[in-house]
Length: 202
Image (cartoon, rainbow, N blue to C red; front, side, top):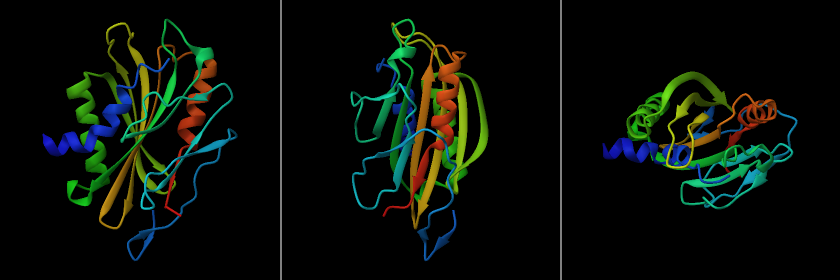
């Protein structure tokens, strides 16, 4: 259980963030083509020179919030104009370093989803394979249960495993709302998820 907990710490942190209202050469990753979107991209600050670079689309109306910044939660944006019933739709980016011995990319992604169900009791979980800037990824949509005054939420988590030598970097981008049918949220969240980037360190 300790291994699984270590692997999923970042994605669980993002899922709980509800209070805010490749090819290689010599084992070194190289940049791959990323999907382009019309929204401007913001650079997520790195902690070390070894970390991959993360970039996040920021559609109009979405603003930076640092209330949840931590070792694993690296960046978050929210849109106050879309707030409903005291909950503000948000997008949370996490990053965690995982040793290659924890498993291959798909094994890491599968463990994350198992822990979402086991620890957060999410329902309606649906997954699909994806690729982000050449790295193995998985998109997972689910319903998160109500927590205290926070109502049940519809969420989509895009998890990406970026491999650099014998180290895997796992980044998750989670978007969530209680009104998934809101057309502005639907369009903005799709843009945020599609345009998310993880590329080699400079």
